Length: 333
Image (tube, rainbow, N blue to C red):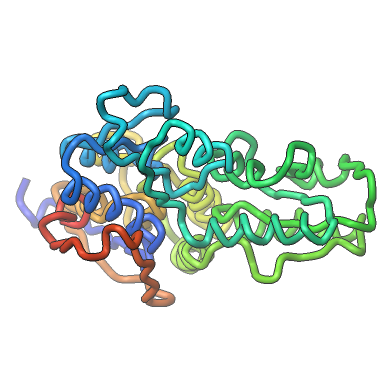
């Protein structure tokens, strides 16, 4: 098909999109550990929720496990990395009991939520955690405190049904990757029911989640289709799909790779919105754009709200190791 035969398409490319500082740091930790200590480097749970990233790290020598007892005895001198989502206190305790050398890649903003929850607990408040049951970040946050110290609330309906032991002595925190609007509704309802509910010292939803949702809100009106690059187990990516639909996109889908695109279902469109969850690499965003350029006379326009400059340092043990562009080319292109 020649250029003249291709239908025109405007791609509204959102910025910021893709990797946040916490995800970038976590991937760097695994890459630097491999450079410093050699393969294998073990990683407990997916380092971030993205299959492409996991497979790229596996190709470099990372081995992913769900539990520490999967690490063979002959490799216990090799590092094990804890994922960006954070882990319960029992996990580093288990690592220490096994004499494992571990590197914690927990996002500093998740660690901040852990500290907020611990502060509520230290001041005698029961902790209300707004988040999604079973998500690794929620498991990690709840695991910072003794069993029974935290109540999980997912929805406004949960907030309505919640009956605490001491309604006047509650403090809340939230998962970092929630929908800003949905979470505001849950917090409002909790405050209506429990006027003495104490907020955390700072917002728990992270800057990257907020920024990505805000730009999708701005870009979505008038889009025939809005594509979010991300994994089905990525909370922040799924929230972006919901945000795009609420903000006016006619349709929104979550896609892991260009090969998943159903061109018959996509059909004739003239305006496409495109963003990526915080754990989705830029190389896949480029792959999606090229797939549309092969079928459309595509013009890319940047929809940008803010520029992110945050940078989180890797673990002290790894700071002397040089990280090159080539080391990260598998995700950054």
